[in-house]
Length: 376
Image (tube, rainbow, N blue to C red; front, side, top):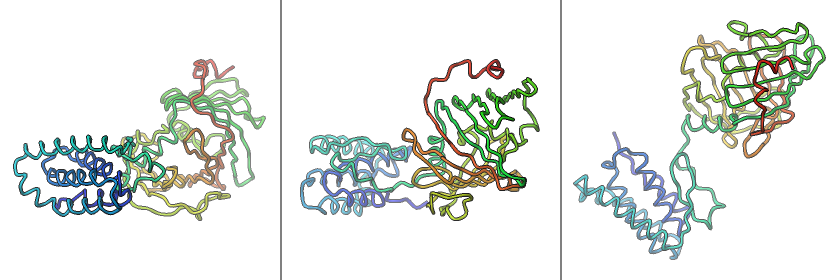
């Protein structure tokens, strides 16, 4: 297997972006990244040693004209193989690494680089306080797992309170329903339909993998289970199974980043987002019993929301499409403001889902998530 000179690929671009004190910080970043990425240091010891030599030179020349530090890094990168020839003993390599990094950290502190730790794709990066307004180069690409985790960060919260509107666009016309919901984590949810009059007072309670429903017209509480979960919820394109689904996708699916693409023109409804650059993910269920065996997902590169999603059966048959037409930011997370769900097996134009209000991390009384609350 061909070994990569990771410092040549990552360190030099970092140094060119931050030519002065940042050279010290960039070198530290790459050294830490190199150790973190390799469970053993034997294969990369020579490069780490060479790069840290360059880092020492960079620290000394931190206030010299632009390009000096970069030149030092390039010199060390090209000479890394030669240094490796002299570091023949694994234990000696480890000692060299420890010594060089220790001295480099000391010099970084003394050179007033004022480094601050920033989380970058699971690896510690060090940035100069003077240059915090400049983003670090995107040198380590996101994985499919990393992208899906960022999607989960947008959707999953300790708890939330939501007022929403569903516009069901059927063959015979449209119906509008308003719903008030409380959600706690991934296992508890309570929803009450506020309108229209025919559905007003209908309530649903999710407790882990069980769903209970109360209808005021019959004054009965029924448990929805088995094949009933696949039925349409209030005539919409959303099923009871969708309502029960764990919002944390990484719990249910393995994921693969298969490419990149654009989403925009093919979205349904009035589109306020325009054409967007996206990561293309393919999700496959980790176990049996998941509503959709696989999903194809276009995730916005900037806000990490799935702007388009195709959901499939195990046979490969398309079951449902989901598109986001408008987004908004709430407490530092991005969330769909307006989306369209279309059941591929049903007639009609789909169901438009609109978030009217949403609050995260609110206090929810314990009695809400009880069967007794269904009759209240």
